[in-house]
Image (cartoon, rainbow, N blue to C red; front, side, top):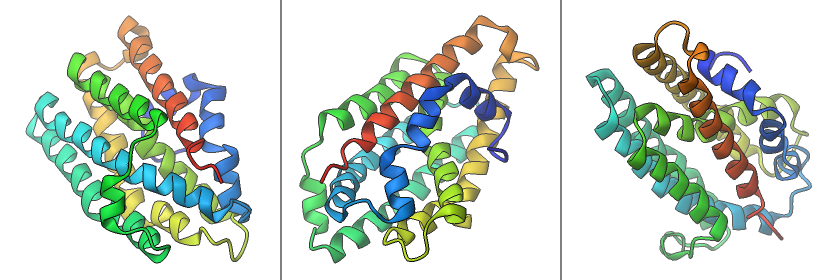
Length: 224
């Protein structure tokens, strides 16, 4: 996948099979060909709504961990995209299925949700700005990759066209490009022009890989 920056591309490659387990999960393929049961999709969407609340907190923590005004602004822009745009898909689709906004707010978080969101927040609390970005990147950029691929490959008439269009759309793809640029600039500013030669690079790649594994597990919340 190109267009999301050098660091993402390198960490994606380092993640190996874990990345394919995430972006080509049976759940994802079920959205592409339309075979995913609707109840499975709704179960996932409810949990993902809860996930986005904590994910937004993690991006807000980026404002605290950031080293420059530009980094702070990038984190704020991502929080806005998550809270004021991405969540609207969840509210709309769930509302059409009779799941109210109040029910979304009150939904109990599944263990997989707790594990993933708290891992990302812990990365930010105990680590630095790069630790936080490495834990955040698989979700933002992985969904961008999935959305762009499914927009090309999905079967005509799939009932998940709305979901696909959200993540393939220019607004979300612009967010992905911005996050990729933020990641590259943050790494270069802290680790120099040859970050892959430093032990720190391996630590960050491991964080990215762990978050990727948690992303793949998250799809399992969509069970009929």
